[in-house]
Image (cartoon, rainbow, N blue to C red; front, side, top):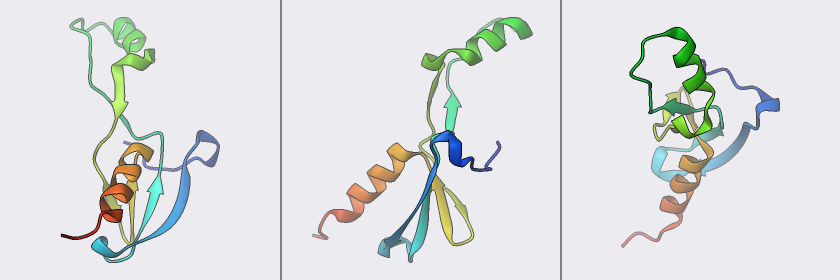
Length: 89
């Protein structure tokens, strides 16, 4: 997986003090997606066609830690921020 961020691809870097994570920086990248549907056919031509279809991809729900920051999809970053904004009970 290529973890290099491209600023033109809709990815952004947002500093957010995450007290539950020890003050890590969240880096959002809309390029973090996984292909969950794959064709039965093993032919390269068919696999390339399936890779081009948007409905065969979904956001990656994993968080990847790199030093003092975590790399996540924007949907996952929203979920993390929502969970941290809840009061402790």
